[in-house]
Image (cartoon, rainbow, N blue to C red):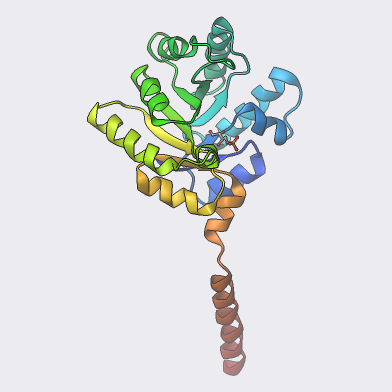
Length: 230
Ligand code: E4P
């Protein structure tokens, strides 16, 4: 599944854009779930996750673990993956202080537990390349955050896509942290398999002031033609 993913935990927004047939998956993270009103601890996460997964099935849904303890990450990933068959588990590239346990966890989840992993919070092609080498199904580069640091995400995307193709690595590139409408097509054009964007950005891709004016003209003149005929 490539193209556009929706970066939200808002069920109504997912329903709306899914019905249009323009999204190919959904990504969430703990910050998004908090913002989108998920309460009730792990049960709350489970309920919202199952609701989204059911709604978009068979499209993929990424859900992130809430711990960085290696055993805890594996335990949560195994449990999340049982909630629905289209769930992928998000694991960050390393721990909050650069701890190196996560790649081993990612490798084990993909190869021993047969769980699809989305490696997240990455800011460079080199991080994504290593996550892909470890066996990740998705590698998530945070394009907006890269740009905010003064680098251009496009260079990283082009380099990464070339490397994945040249080395025959299965990982699909997701570019997230999308800040501007312009980013969506420019990142897909640069070689991203997927860009994940918030609902407001997708609405902005669709609606154009000049299209509005044109549609208004058609409806106004259509009404006049119909009046003349009757
Ligand atoms: C992607 O999968 C992430 O959930 C998201 O795009 C992170 O973006 P942020 O920089 O807005 O936190």
